[in-house]
Image (cartoon, rainbow, N blue to C red):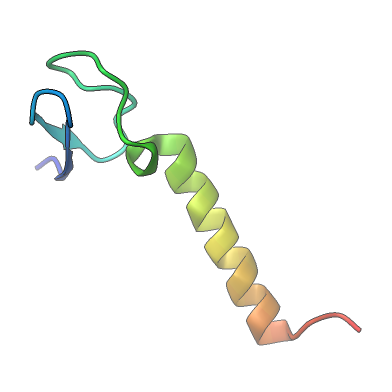
Length: 58
């Protein structure tokens, strides 16, 4: 079952998580719905968690 979280602002089509554009009107997806931004957010979260657990260097 597909996860549909984001809605296209142009046509109100419910978009799948990670889609780069709307499949109905072909407009770009919201920034947070794009796969690259999700991967970047996950990497930043992991790095922040490691920094908090290990403590700042110095």
